[in-house]
Length: 366
Image 1 (tube, rainbow, N blue to C red):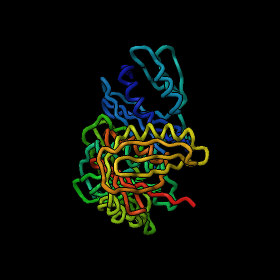
Image 2 (tube, helix red, strand yellow; image 1 turned 45 degrees about the vertical axis):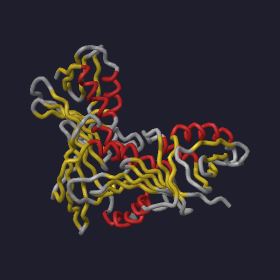
Image 3 (tube, rainbow, N blue to C red; image 1 turned 30 degrees about the vertical axis):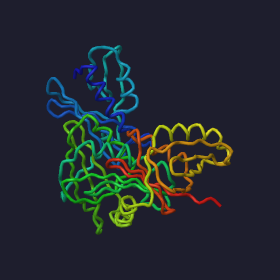
């Protein structure tokens, strides 16, 4: 089997992103290569998800081997010849490029290891999803899981329904979009991180099904598929879905607050960067508003910066405390130069831009 190196390297970069490095096992360390007609499929799994990347061959081939993923992928990434040749030789893959290399085929007992697919049967939902939606979940909702500490198991997951996606810890991120059909699912962080595989795709075909595991156990499975990427995954117990306070979170993000200001995003980020140098006592910032400005203090209140507001509020004074690290993580995802920030109920500060709403809790420090 002869492969054009540059094109195959692009395929290698894609599948490399899907390898689970956090939980080493016989399965996560294995790459399965299998042909069907003139297509070569590169498959990896951690048994929670299964990813298959399709590579178009010049001719029909017969080839099937499972090898050490890291060794194979790292070798191919360093090849400089125009073409790579691969053949099966005894219990090895023989690779001819800058030199000749033999990579042992992985066996499970007497048979070659075949990675278990995650099939989606008994389909209950099918639709197309814009890849921009999946990437926005990855780019925006994932930040919320970095800014707080989960208290309940459900707070480690991404809630997705036909109206958007929600992640929540101490605060929340509300991502508003509309899907073709009703849905309510929870995805884990590993699966959502794989949405980056679809960055060069316009539409992704989504499928959801119920797998009967026996003894009354039903497992929900999902599939996200484009022309050359196939991602399937097993979902968590569906009973967790109902524990997400969807209505309460969306109401908190969209209700009318007493105060609304317009402020330069970069001015806040730059002030946080400078003030954080003097925050030996903690990562909190004190925000004190007047009619035309906000003063931001460090934790010890021995350093401060004043930022002018873009709008003016008459007879206006308000104070709150925020975690500066959390605030900066959120601000770093904002593409807008100026942000609308609402607050005033003593509980939450809301950053609302386009389809993304961030809820940041006001802190109480004793």
